[in-house]
Amino acid sequence: MSSTEQTPRPARLAAAAGVALVEALGLLAGGVYMLVRALTGDGGDLTSGATGAVTVIALGLIPLAAARGLWRMRSWSRGPAVITQILALPVAWQMLQTDGVIPAGIVLAVLAVTGLVLLVNPATTEALGIRRPGQDAP
Figure (cartoon, helix red, strand yellow):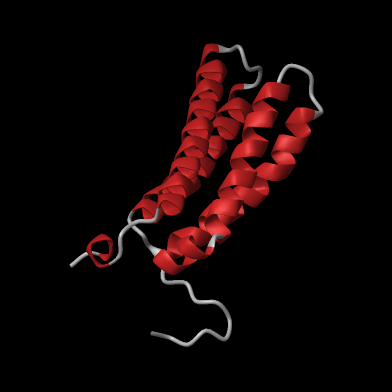
């Protein structure tokens, strides 16, 4: 019997998985865009462009795995999802300081804050089987 059969998936947990998925898709799309630019010569140095692109693609795999884990109600997935949200906040702040990417910075900030709120929600932590300090095991 899977964990979804034991406990219904709370809407907040599904929403947190959705936020992580949107962030993952954004990173993956950005990495592919950077790679195409590097390979076509638009991005300057091929080596540094390709390295940056592969790094962004690899970083996109973290929230993608977290989204899948959250959807499947795996407790391990909350950690990478929370870290992704925390790391997104300073990136969003920098984007808000740069002309031309302010709308993307607003979207990223809203996603990160929303993701954090959803991930620390008691219904989410309970569904993932995460206990608070001092809470007895069932």
